[in-house]
Length: 320
Image (cartoon, rainbow, N blue to C red; front, side, top):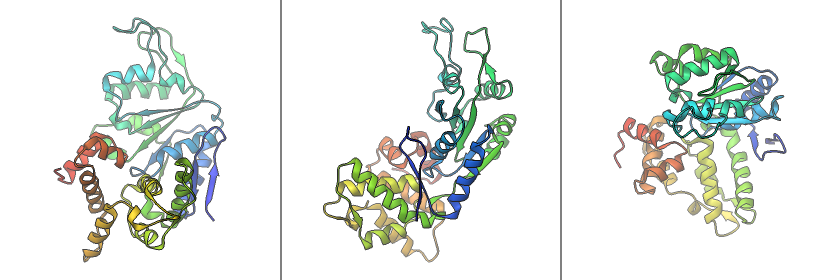
């Protein structure tokens, strides 16, 4: 039976965990939640790192305070410091009023950094001082502000490699890396897939006002044969689309995205198994074809930023 947990009545999310791979990760998260230790969560895009950060927060003594997230990959560098530390009136042109930053908003709670390597080195140095001294000053401020915050970093990047390349300060990395966990990709959680499918069908049907649906045997076989380079997020998107377009009591093969057929045909045509990189390149090409080369739309479907999409297109020499 699937292990589905309602973490808190204040929020509406569930974690479906059947496989030992994900259950062991959740066990570590629950133990860390009892402490104030900082945490690094590694995992491919779409594996559910953000969900684990929420689990950590709502299982901790900090659950009555805020969980605040900073998406470092989309936050403009010129706004990083004012967003993190806040500012006093007159600190710069246009600062007509004082404004608290995200550090203050997270006081007593949890501050989550998504892809921290995108923070500039100057902002990293200031953040390091916050971790060391548990205080900071707003831009233009003269008095330190004491805070009590747990820091969580989410990443799909090898941070030790980022340190070696000078993209991340080594001392900041070690301050954040008190405990680390690696969230397994969906291809290593095969036992979870049927339960995740059932969960997403029920949730999508309720959300879109559709009747209870079942998955046909052929549609189930097609999904179970797929490697899901986009992980749980991709599966969720596939199921939601299928629930919306399904016309009947079952989700049929015809209700699933066309790129699944292309992927399956390519897999079956190979004499050896495809690498994950091959699957990711194939998936990105199929999504770009589906969106007729519209990069913003493709990035939204893939669950990544436009910048990440361009980087992957360059990596796999995709020209669309």
